[in-house]
Length: 202
Image 1 (tube, rainbow, N blue to C red):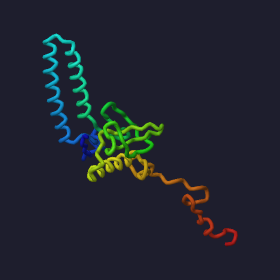
Image 2 (image 1 turned 60 degrees about the vertical axis):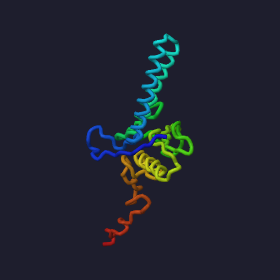
Image 3 (image 1 turned 45 degrees about the vertical axis):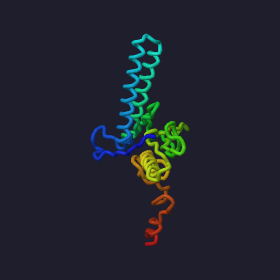
Image 4 (image 1 turned 90 degrees about the vertical axis):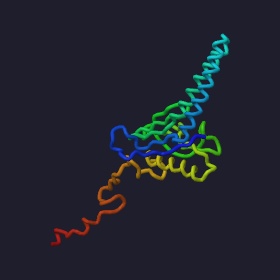
């Protein structure tokens, strides 16, 4: 299970600076880099030895090395980055770019890297498609980590203006509903005309 951390840039007015950035924590990234290096070194040695013997297994060893490097590269690059109205989800096996207007719901669920008892944040698009965010995955056996995932979910829901944060998050419509003719506010009758003196009676 990978560990993740949330980073919010202090200067959001800087060009290209993400509003929300969720990625693998430094400790997890170091562990993954070490595993990548050690495993890759062993795979290189095996590939060279097999190639020296002229065995067809050398091709399989070389292919395994490529898969190993690609897999750990994706692990190291997993992230959720929000800039303005666009969210970029760099998952383990794919990358998604999601526009704020296409988000229908932000909830908690499972993904390919977050099987029970682990959970992650899941974005449901307006067309019904579900996109789990692998970088948000956390085990639910720890209360601190469980709250961490819930915090990710709240922040992303606030960004997308869905759920409890609809109408209060960034980009929300702050305009008031227009009143009906003859009313000062929606649902409240306008009594100002009734309080004016009748010109005919003066």
